[in-house]
Amino acid sequence: MDNNNKKKTNNQKQAGINTKSFTKVHRKVGVFFMPLLLVIVITGAWSLFRAELLQWQFPHFELGQTSFETSSAESGVDNGLESKSSQRKSLQELVDIARNEHGFEYSDFSIHDKERYGDFVLFFNKTDGVENMLFLDPVSGEALDSSQSSFSETVYDLHLKLLLPSSIGKYLVGLMGLLLMYLVFTGFLAHKNIGKNFYQLRLHKGRQIFVTDLHKLLGNWSLLFSGLMSITGALLGLFSIVLLVLAMAAYGGDVKALFADFLGTQPKPAGGMVDFISLDSLYQLAQQQWEGYKISTIEIHNYADPAMRVTFEGELMNGFLTQQHVTFDAINGGVTFVTDFTDKGAGGYMYSALPSLHFASFGGTWLKLIYWFLTLALLLVMVTGITIKSLRLRDKGFSTSDLIVTQLSQAVILAASIAVVFGVVFTELMNPGDYTTLGFITLAAVVYTLMSNKFNWLSSVSLAGWILVIAGVVVVFKGEVLLMTLCLTLGLIWLFSQKVGSMVNKANPGLNKQSSTK
Amino acid sequence: MLRTFNTTLMAFLLAIALCMIMVLFLPVSLHNRLLLTVVFVAPIWLGIAVWVTQKNNMKRVLVYQLITLFVLIGLIAAGLYYG
Image (tube, rainbow over all chains, first blue to last red; front, side):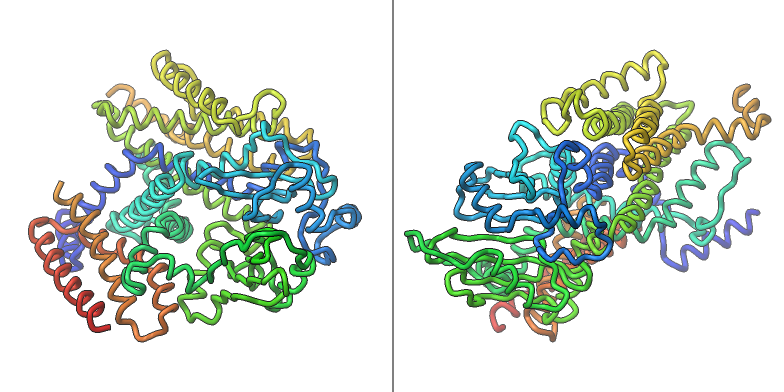
């Protein structure tokens, strides 16, 4: 045995890899940043179904298909929805309703389609750092009341910037993405026999060995996904910092010049009101720009001004390439700027695919479900990581800082579950889309976690699991199969993460006795 | 402490410097260079961070990193000045 060990260490020295330092860093960083990472990963998983969340929260809006394409010749649209889509108001009518009836009178704004924002048309404007949003039902022209905070937007904001001021939050999330990437790769490299970790799962050698094997097994199989998510997430979060550096190298530090080179510039308003080409006609013109071009966002600058510009942003290759832009002069219908990432070489394709890889926008519900299950695997890896830590320290107990982060992690899991249940299942009782309500839910989760640890109540993670499972069962009666699948799977993952240890102990009573006598 | 410094800040500075070198010297079109850089900045940082993590002598690593950084800064300065 000793000889074998010596050989192994010699081999490692020859390969020049010091696995001990990887293990050490992986443990420390992993435990310390667990609560923040959990917030980002859980909200990220739910953000995959951002459009559906909005629909589940406000089911009384009976919405039809809201794609701007009036022909609605998309495959897979059933007859009932097609008849609704024919009643849908035109783009220009919707803009007029938003401006005249709902007071959305900004001269610069954007309109987003259902792909990302549910079956609503979203009007968006940002003035002096304040975001103004208007969700409009495209069939009736009815708008969501501003007091009805959208749970899906709150979840997405948490994922995007942790509800912090825009740039700081994005940087923090970007840094967490880098950290997750670092954890994923140090975790992969920390083990001596990497190949074995892909299949080894020892069921009858005690709780610690089983959980460690499960952690390694799931971690290895979801490595590619976790790595991809963290890299793309980090890049999207830290994008503006990278832009600064690029601008320094290529444009003498002028970030505006960089933007102008890629996206063109918008002229200043000339003043006055003029007639312009209808937005629907411009939409038709934009669709002819590329074959298979699917428009997702319309940006309008200087509305009804002589210098009015309309930019269409959309996707190619079934949504795999995002961010193809074409800008029109809305007065004479001429094209003023085109951003085509397909003619910018390999870098253009890679960059353009980044958001779609992260948001799973290049496939339908099935792709999102695949992403969902891979995220569940990542969550299980994270939670088993904490379990390993607690099992390793069974006799010694946690240090104060570790104890705080572990309890915070438990509270995060509980709070997320409660929020989801009230956000999409029992929507009449409270609205966790509202920041104050969300704060109270989090506080309640923290208090329960502290009490449960003190009085040996049901652990927060188990409670979170049961809440989600019960919600999943309730949802069955509403006929929401997708929501049921999501709630049940996430709930069962939480329950499973808590039960694995005791299951293994029951399977091996001899070992259980030994540990209890010790 | 030195390990954390080398893994995070120094590695990040090196990654940024390498990206600037890519923007300045890669033999492809400007747009392609810029976009490639956006895509590769995080993996470059990760590579350096992982390399630093598994080293034992952090003082030596810091010296290596500083020397590399100075060389890269020299190259960037040259690229910006004559480019």
